[in-house]
Image 1: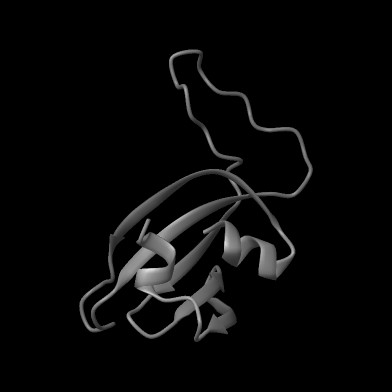
Image 2: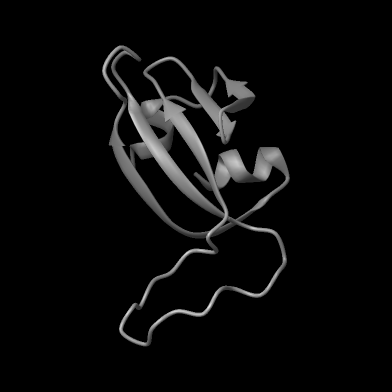
Length: 89
């Protein structure tokens, strides 16, 4: 997911969450990416070892492309970043 963030000019800032796409959207994965806008991270309990920034983007990853969304707005589509590119290795 760092490649997606780099192309968008945003900094990756935390863990990803991945789930299947909702029914009707086709086979693929929905990935939540925490990004860094330069502000201080939010307070978190000491027993939560990994916390993102609270600022998220989503990527819909398919066998032939990756689509990046800011909320419901499609920001970019990358035909060269596929499921195999993002998760193989």
